[in-house]
Every structure is written in structure tokens, then in C-alpha cells.
Length: 211
Image 1: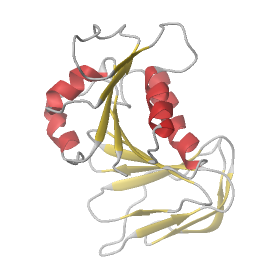
Image 2: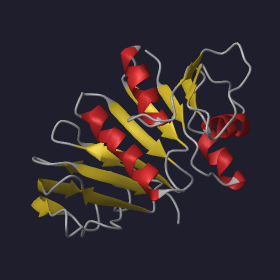
Image 3: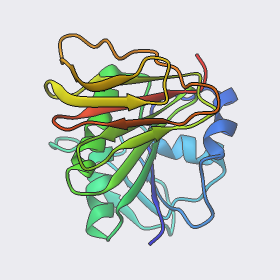
């Protein structure tokens, strides 16, 4: 099945649109979430589905399938979009316009990555500088060439049995405590691919292309 791309309304610089466009594939199923309609227009893509309470963008007059949500609800527009896509059978997700701007929305969107990982699904958030992905005991990760740094942060508690190979600062069966995030700004060794695993807990992997 094709990948589902969720486009949110986080602010995105005009100079960054090209970098985000490079992530898109011809067969992506695209959901634009409310203010994400602005970004989808700048990306030059037509949504397959539009979702939102339309407090950030007026409800479009279009033949595209549109789900209108109430303003007062538990799920954000982005969370609802992901749940709806899962209901339709998607299990591979890319979120654009989901980081930056309001920190509370960014953190809420990061939690989506772990919600997906716990269900055996894959999710990634990409913005103009970085990519974010969940690392769990069942979902190891790699960082190849093309990234300036990568960071690992324990999420939702301590992470144990953390191993990093192929990096300037390796770890072997280590612990990263939630209140002491020392896994910031690691680097890939020349010609190597960093490999990351964790035995207990959850990590947020941040691959950084540039500052």
C-alpha cells in the first residue's frame, strides 16, 4: 500500500519548501490538515483528503473528500488525520508541517510517532533541518551519510540497553535517563552507517542535516 503523507500547519520558510518537496512520491496518499492546506499549495500537491476544524484555513469549496471536525475535541486535526489513515489501512507515514512554531503542537505530533510504533507502524516527521523517528525495542534505526549530527532522547521515561555503533560517540548496553539527555549531537564516522538499538524504553531519533 502507498505511504500516507500528513501535511500540517506548522510555519515553514519559503526557502525550505523545496527540501520538503523532495520527500514526496508520486503514489503518496496526501491528507492536508486545516492550515496544512497553505503548505500543500506551496508544495504544489493536491490532497487526496482534507481534514480539519478550519480555524486556520477557511473550509475549501472543492470536490476533494473533506472531513469537517468540531473545534472542541480531544484529537488535534493531525491526530485525527493519522487515526483516519490507519482506519483506511495505511501503516507508513510521513508528517510535514508538523514541527516548529508552537512547541506544544510539535511535542504532540512527536507523540504520534510512538503511537504508530507501538502498533507496528512506521512514522517520520521531516522539516527543513531534521528528521524525527521513534526507536523502540521492536524498531531499531540507522543513520547514514548526509547528516551532520544525530541525537537520541529518552521519551516517556528512562531508556535502557541503548547501543550505538558506527558513531563518534558509541554506546554499549547503556542507559539514557529521561531527566539527563546526554545523547545530543552525535556524529557518524566517515564511511559508516550508525546503527541504534534499545532493549527497554523508547528513544526519539533526530537526524540533523543542517542548523
